[in-house]
Image (cartoon, rainbow, N blue to C red):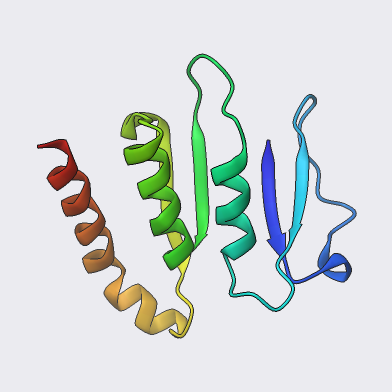
Length: 116
């Protein structure tokens, strides 16, 4: 399943292709903060049985919340979860890239603290 959050229907991309058997869900956030609809959808979706890979890339604050949810609350193995903030609300690209290493280190420290 692929979730894509956009402001509304006008931002949906008709030519976005997904593989056979993959469900694409457009999430409309309206006036809420970016990531709000995405986080809610991921929290509500049942995960299929068995093992699989989770790929979450997007706005850093939403990604951080989803990382906590998927790893701490749902118990997914970090080796099977690719979770990365691609941009951060309120930052320029240059400022985000300059601080991203520290951001990632803080996330890793959170994971280490939970593992104890």
